[in-house]
Image (cartoon, rainbow, N blue to C red; front, side, top):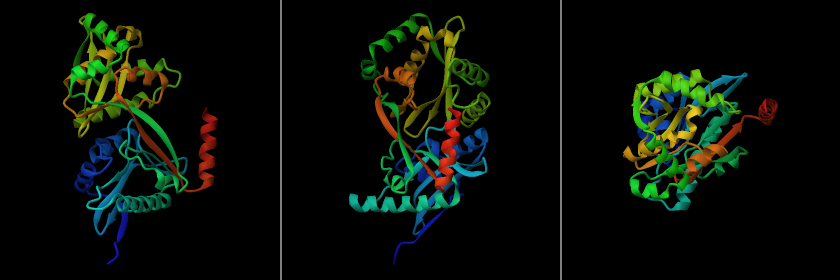
Length: 328
């Protein structure tokens, strides 16, 4: 009998989360818990879309559904490194057949997206490297980067760190800074505002949104916040780290710009890397020159990932492109 395919929203949390855990590209950011936090913090409805073959979930993607400017949209939410495409492992098939099967699932998912949404913006996890099913349908695909580190051997990691970064870490240690856990969301907000008020591009999201998201992530146990504080009580920065399946993520941060020359933020990352037991650490983005320069100092591996964007019609694409141009 021929295979039968169905594409529909997945309402069963347990089914979806079990799929995410074993799928290529599956990370904490596609789980029900994360999507629900994102929906509460940033406004939207979590949509988890599954491709079923003969009743089995073989591919999927997720994001927040929103109505904005009269358009139905599906988007990887703010302050979420990626949602995007997920693919179940293909068992006992050669590479050509496995690729054909995965492409078929992608084509059906894209059919669904183009029918249900006017505009789709998805950030895909680094494990998803084949964007051809999207580009063959005239979607835009753009490459972005992050840095990833193996933190299992602190001595080997120290050897990889650039000299300039080792120097400022030692400086912060001599100044008496030390890593401490914190659940002070108000402190995070204050330092988040302090950090981005000094930057011409502004914050990635409004402080209210960031504060709500951080509070939700800490409350649900998806992440842990750490501050770096001097002996006399000066807090130089706060970073919220997300606990993934095998990866820890540097997710959200705030810092006091007046203490940049202390090296305290570099020490915060170093002391955190020395204590975690995850297989990998992800700096979550290296796409802004100054940010990439700081993160590169820790000697991580440059890791690419993709963003894909699709539109129901050429008219919608032109209208949104014109609106973006006016904002520049």
